[in-house]
Length: 233
Ligand SMILES: [Zn+2]
Image (cartoon, rainbow, N blue to C red; front, side):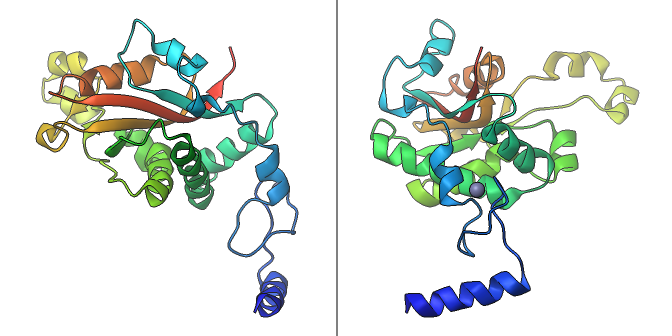
């Protein structure tokens, strides 16, 4: 059975060359996007296992969170940076799904995120999402959801953006007030949830804090945060 699969993989490799997104190696099965060597070399933080980890500390005194984590260290010229670039700017959505699945597996193992009931991606500005074709945080959520079997509430929060048309309509003042802020829609869908807010990278935490504060206005909502990587300071 496995021999047959090997032959099938070899034939497919000849017809449709399939290489690792990380290093270009062709030693990987058709269904994988990263080779085992690249996966093993990703710099895991293991923050998901520990309370009071550096990502949780970013939010201390700013946002009351149940738990927070980031999966990998982000450094310049690294494999993580290369993968982030492929995922965000080269339309490699499949890679994002794979990274999301790996996040889901780590979160599952940690047990600290067991009582999460819904995933919410940090929204992008609508124009940016349109240009990119997708919100990278939503793609990560889809990968995580496939492991944790949780709903992805990707319409729960929006990020209004000032546009020419709206200015012409004389709504300048109104848009000045909401531009860049997060608006929670469908509040009733979020009541009583333990929301895991997802983004690709955390640096100062300001954007996640701003979105998280809006979510915490909802009654009985518990909030946690998970990002794919954390930029070293
Ligand atoms: Zn590789």
